[in-house]
Image 1 (cartoon, rainbow, N blue to C red):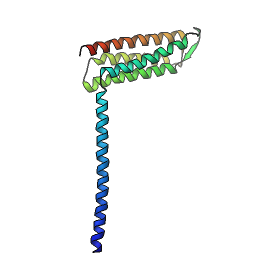
Image 2: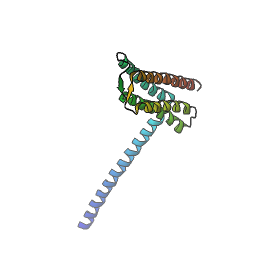
Image 3: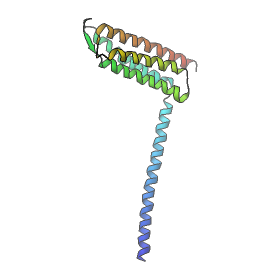
Image 4: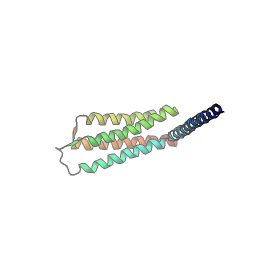
Length: 159
């Protein structure tokens, strides 16, 4: 009789362990499905445009910093590298649309953003940039972002 009771206890314990494992598997599967659904729903032109707007806003915030400085001074490139990161995030978003949705039209948008990020990196790799060149870089990036946002609007208007 004791043997039967012991085997029932171990079976009950084993069933509880398996039930806990099953619960963990079910919850993690639901969580992964929700995350996958969320990331798929963000793959829209507006997502790329919002990232471009963030980069543009950051770039516009850099310009007032140089107003009262002399032309012979040099500025550190930390802010330019942060701007490069914003541009790379926008380019990555566009490349995600190209990859996941097979949308070849966004290849031009992604490459334009990526080329701007690479140009910023090449200028910033020395560590310091003259103030005048700094202003020219930031204004050229703002102009390029405006062009990219016009392309995105044109692409969205055709759909």
